Length: 441
Image (cartoon, rainbow, N blue to C red; front, side, top):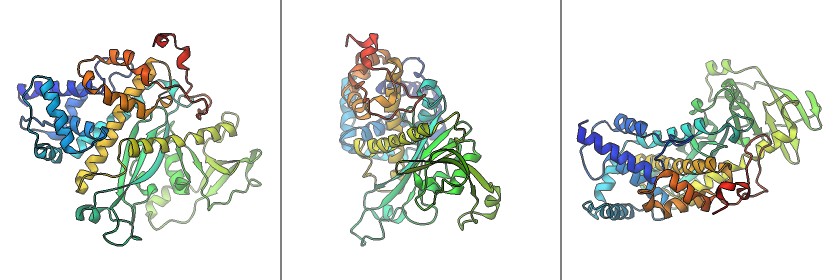
């Protein structure tokens, strides 16, 4: 890379960070490191020619495109023309063809790695008090999105077979791993909605790197199978999962810990058709699990020490699973990912990666504001934060990160909902009215 191109990349990286209020060092200020951004661009793109739509500029425009209400390419180019005129630079053409071509050239790995690394670094740098008893809690859930009805999309992600040909849209399944504490999407996997190895559990098995010693995994009963639980526990993670509706729970068996609270051994079932005999032999013959019942819910957990974690604490912890439903709703409804626009499978995958990267950038700004004002990120409104970032988009290019947080953040740090579900021992929040630093707002 020549010196001119290198200095140009540094300027574009600085502009990228400024757009998302990332310009100074703080506890969470280096989640989006400029050096790392430059390394990602260089590693994923390699060489490129100098143009208006450089790789990092195209990424920035792509992310802003999925964050805005009008997600058309023409609107993205119009906003870039306006920004260039405001900076006293020559306006680019109003033709959106070059921008669309630049998006096609953009490597999927660059968009995906930006989103994944932001989520991972945010989780790594977050204060321990945001976690449940200092332990990272990871939420797992799946969803589906519809695609543009093109032959290419139909071939890779066919529509529901119950619909007649020509009357339905291509469908794509996504499984995401989300941090409970900061709300970031740590990783995701996608597939068609029908066929072998396209279910939610099969997709989760492709993301083993995100579960390790000390993690707590919360999921719905879709993930309550013996082999999924054993797979997670082999990686050192504890689980809190709702019991599958087809499994009978008899509280007369096992070691009684209290009313409708016991520890029981699950026996390994026969080898399923989708699992190799070699993998089957690595699975334990029994699993010692705790089962509790609260109301109509039966919950399975590997947190078996009743003296350390009570029945009510496990119940409250499982209730926090609802946050992943709200997170997915924010991405699909607020960021309009429920219906994707791109017309080819390759661009669809890039569009999904752009949505998750943009979502994590908004979550980063929320986490930085929450850390400054000693509140939980889960007490803030994602939609409100996104609205403020949209509204202050132009001003951010000339406004330092700390000035933005001090002047702007208090306006979208919404009052906490006292009825929200907060686990005992974690995710404690301080009412804004008790924070002396922001009373003058």
